[in-house]
Structures are given as C-alpha cells and as structure tokens.
Length: 355
Image (tube, one colour):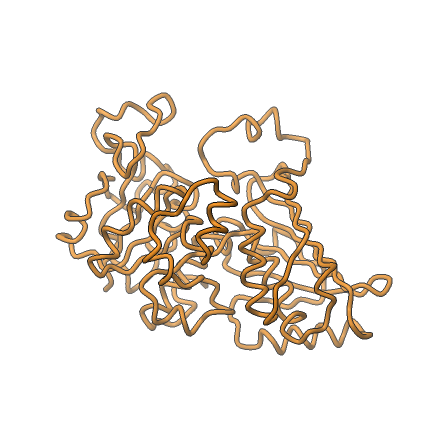
C-alpha cells in the first residue's frame, strides 16, 4: 500500500481524486490538507467563503457531502514534517498555481514523489511561465526535473519521474486530437485552429462573478481570447510531437453545464485523405492507449462524464480535417489522469481504479 496525501482538499478536483483513490486497492489515503486552517500552505482562505479559520479542522465529508459515510478523515494544515512522520510516499497537489511551487519543494527535497495538478511545473521554460502567469517561477531546480504528465505521449518518462506535472484539461483534447496528424507531418502547421467549450466546474469551486449562476446560465461566451494560459502548454507538447515549433489559434468558451469539455480542431491536410484513412491512422497511433476511444460517431460530453476516457473522431469537410474531442474535465481532465500517472509511477496496471 502506498501512503498518499492530497494538498488542497476543498476543490472539485480534490473531491474527484478522493473518490478514485478510495477504490484504489494499493492506496492508503493518509492525509488531506486544506488552506482553511490558519492560513496554511501559504494562503489564508476567506472566512466568509469557507468558515472561520479558528474552527476545528473540517472532516472531508463536511467539505464534500458526497463523501459522507465513505471516509472518516479530518483535514489538517500543511506540515511537511508531519506528512513525513505519517509515512507519506506520494503527494497529489491540488493547490492553485503559485502556491504549489512554494509548498512542494519541501517535500520534493525529502524524496517524496509528487503529482502536481496545478500549472506550476508544466512549462519547461521559466521565461514562458513568467510571460503567461505574470510572475517569476522561483523553483527552477524542480522545474527542470518535472515530467509533463500526459501518459499517451510521455509514458516512459513518467514512470521514472519524481515530479509529474499533471496536464491541463483543454490541452489534453488539443494535444491528443492533433498528435497523430503532427507526428506523421500530415497537416499544415501554420493554420491550426482549436475551438474549445468547457463546463463551469473548469473554473474551480471558488466563487467568481462570471461563474455566478445568473451570469453564466443560458449564456455562452468566449474568454481569455488570445491570452489563455493553456496555449503555451498545448504548443510545447505539440512541438515535441512534431519535432518543430508549433503554434495554434486556441479559443476557449464557457458553456452553461457542470462538467465536460468539447473541442473542435481544424487543420489543412498536406495530401488527400478519406475519413476511413484518418480513423485508421488514429486507431493505429493510439492502439496501446487504454483511455483513448476512437469512435465513428461525433462524441458528446455525456459519453465520457465521470470517466477517464477521451473520445476522438475525425471528419473531412471541404478539404479540411476536422477533429472532435470530448472528455470529463474533472476526471480525465484532472484527477483521473493524475491517478493514471500514479499507476505508471508505481508500476500498477494503468487502469487500476479507473475502470
């Protein structure tokens, strides 16, 4: 049994992660920390949002009522010494970007393996991180060691890593939707368009005006046009796949549903393809990928809700390739792929607790 801790237990991602880990036969969920306790982990929570920090540390079931009767664990403040004394071997970081890179070094320096679900260790170049996140990184040593946690692309490197940078939700649909085409140099690299839609849970659990029900219900809008921080993440991995620099035009949209991402990708082929040839190309590229489903129909977000599957299909429209991708942003987009990475780290079957 691997003793596991979760840092930052109050969000949607943590709730999904806990549910998956509770059914993992090789996991002992030993500790869950929360920033609600005395401003631990570097940031003090707003007491108006989560209860006064002077109160007793909450039970997980108080933060997430869906866990009632499933686990009787009380949250604790972040204390690296305490986690080590409890024998924690692996940590899942569910902290916001900027907080992770200040909290995790104390564990990494003592040999703990970490799967970080924030964006802090995804971008290899600290200058790119500073450009897109507006602040310097501050943990360059561990940034240089981090492995991007997309198993279908970096599976062998993940298995040997100490620090895995879990991928973002949007990037997975874009990267995995384009990888077979770019790996085979089948498309023009200067005209790639990625159009994505996400449910509201993708914005996190902390209340915000634009995700307030009267603001987002019965309304669809684009946001962070040309400025979304997942753009360099998408381009970094696609450049690895293609073996040359790749740029994409990425536009995200907010859809009034709880969960799910649907992405449509447009690309110009370098030669003629039939749809059956493209589907065969995708099936061959992902023939060993347990959680990529190449489907003949146009996928829908409900098809993969609650699962770790990413559904893909492809069409030819007026001489262009159109790729459709759908996943659950909280499972495959975050917690599910984190457990997939955990399974690779420790040599367990990749599907453990995920099917």
